Amino acid sequence: MSGSQFNPPGAQLLHDIKRVVGDAGWMDVTDAQRHFDDPRGRFKGRGCLIVMPDKTEQVAAIVRACNGAKAGIVPYSGGTGVVAGQLSIDSDNAVILSLERMNKVREVSLDDGVIIAEAGCILENIHNAALEQGMMFPLSMASKGSCCIGGNLATNAGGIQVLRYGNARDLCLGIEAVLPCGTILSELSPLHKNNTGYDLRHLLIGSEGTLGIITAASLILKPVDPETATALLAIKSPAHALMVYKAIRQHLGDATSALELMSGLGLDLVTSMFPTLRNPLEHGSDWALLLEATGPLGIGERLETALTDCFENNLVLDAVVARSQSQRDNLWALRENTPEANRMSGAFCNSDTSVPISEVDAFINDTNAAIADIHPDVRINSYGHIGDGNIHHNVIPPAGVAKAEFLTSNPGIIDAVRMAINQTSHRHGGSISAEHGIGRLKTRDLEAFADKARYDAIRRIKVALDPNNIMNPGVLIN
Ligand SMILES: Cc1cc2nc3c(=O)[nH]c(=O)nc-3n(C[C@H](O)[C@H](O)[C@H](O)COP(=O)(O)OP(=O)(O)OC[C@H]3O[C@@H](n4cnc5c(N)ncnc54)[C@H](O)[C@@H]3O)c2cc1C
Image 1 (cartoon, rainbow, N blue to C red):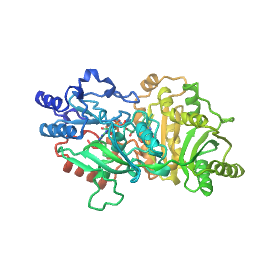
Image 2 (tube, rainbow, N blue to C red):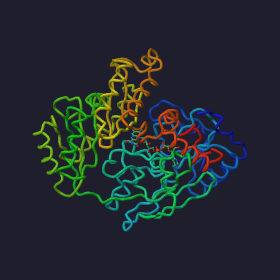
Image 3 (tube, rainbow, N blue to C red):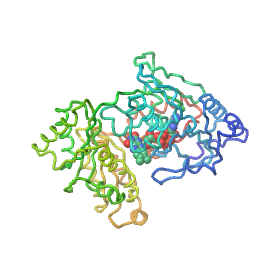
């Protein structure tokens, strides 16, 4: 990203912005270091002011003022994005617009089956607000205690239940947003059918703050299923994971809500980095599958019957079924602490690719081979949402070698590995970004791998809606 994309905001603009929000609504950058942290510790954000409006009208006034002065805005929700979309990494000139004070649940309507939440609501708080009404909001991921619904929608986040419920886009009925000219787009009505031209909600979802600021959303609630069954299975290969899924579907229909592939290496890393966690599978295996199904009473028994079939057909080597909520939490802790265990182990490349499900096994084998060609001793923790074809490859220095030392003696390896993964995914008909987005980190990759017509249309939409390029300049396209 070029710093020149952010015009320096003049003293008058900063004064006007502070007046819009009052004393409680802004922070000097020296007081706001958490807004500049990258969850993986790779970048440091910069900026000239943190502004924290608490009303949509305030957001609109700030955007109008910035648009008039052609000053750049970086929208910020929970700060858990992993592609530096929420961080101005090479310019001090950005106004950081944090939604943290817009954190109210405005309404829960059981008749409509929706919850209307402001953009700064933490995802887990939305889960809890839904549960209080006997309902659930199914979007979930390891960052749920920090990420906010505004960021989830801006990145069209995925997570662990996409298999059954879809990603953020599929769970949003309506949106309120401030467009780059400062107009408020108010489409929170929980209509399931609305064919009145372009669906601007879907244009804003996944736009990573480049087309406007999402201020609130109507989100779809689902009934809480009476029973949950969770199992951790030892399997021979990713191909076996998909065979198990097929077999389970024959017994449970579409009740499987999560299907997470984990590698033997990943389980070893997470249990060594978090000594309170234990891998309950008795015999080590190269691969494991964390599977969860929810449904009517009796789903647990049906899962066990399905697993018996899987054993008889040699699809599963070992299995542990959770008998209590705390055992279930322990199984999930193995998966949810995996990103942090990768970071602590010195991962220097964290991919977020997806391929058609039929290609997953070949994709994992081919990427592992391509990375081994670059450096035969690196460790590769391939894991992820295998039911959606979304695999994260985390590449880690050889055992006993520190990350800094490894990167110094292998210059260029980060780019080489990233390109090898992208090319392999592309060859298998996949995407270079399954759920994390493009941010500032992958703009060159998008340009290299996107279909030209698609890339050109994205550019033209951006220019049409944000002619002054004030909304998150440098994200998505450069
Ligand atoms: C441990 C861990 C696990 C994760 N697991 C997953 C996972 O399973 N699936 C997944 O999809 N992601 C995952 N992520 C990535 C991250 O949590 C998601 O991308 C999340 O949706 C970001 O939300 P946020 O509120 O933190 O957004 P931020 O980081 O604040 O922002 C993300 C992007 O959205 C823009 N933005 C933020 N708020 C708004 C707004 N109100 N309007 C317009 N633009 C806005 C920002 O400018 C930025 O470009 C994980 C991250 C971590 C650290």
